[in-house]
Amino acid sequence: MHADLKKYTDNELIEMFRAGDAAVGDHLVEKYKGLVKKKARLYYLEGGDHEDLLQEGMLGLFKAMSEYDPKKEASFLTFAGLCINRQMLSAIEAAGRKKHRALNESVPLEEVGDSASENGISAALDPEAIFMEQETEQELIKRIKENLSPMEYGVLELYLDGLDYRQIAAEMGKSEKSIDNALQRIRGKLKKMR
Image (cartoon, rainbow, N blue to C red; front, side, top):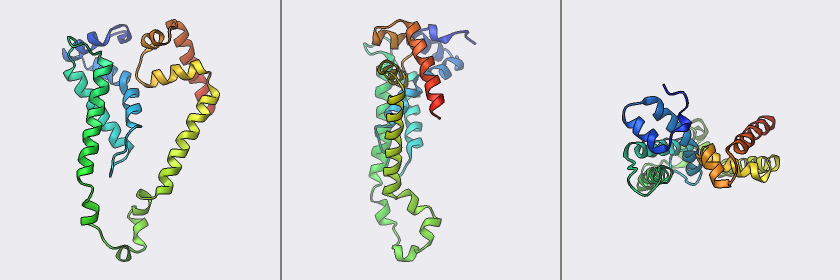
């Protein structure tokens, strides 16, 4: 076990992971799961749900961890983003090829009758439920923005993109300590919002 994996660069972590250190793999997954979540919010998987997209994204992240070449010019963050996108888009494309399956295997609604809701059909296809879910997400984002300062919100976005303290500090031109303090304030404010 390593005392503090945060002090290593991504290239060093990838090397340690490929040498068989499972703890490093767990650390990389934890570090970049925010990037997977952010990218999953951009897509819709026909016949699947958000969790399916997250799983596809995690597969893309794992492929990035296995295939990344530090000798190339792209950073691991950039390469991981591409792998995650490709994996999700492949899943969406595969689901799209099955788009006519519902028509070919359909049963007239008259035959289904009242059993539709028992079989979960109405809930899965309810546009109102989908709209309400999107509206709830937008309300949550609005509440978060109202409770955080612009700087804190910027830090949160970068953190959710999978950046660590050092990367956020470099991106925003702030000290690592100010980023750490901002994240602590953000956690406190988000807990109070529950």
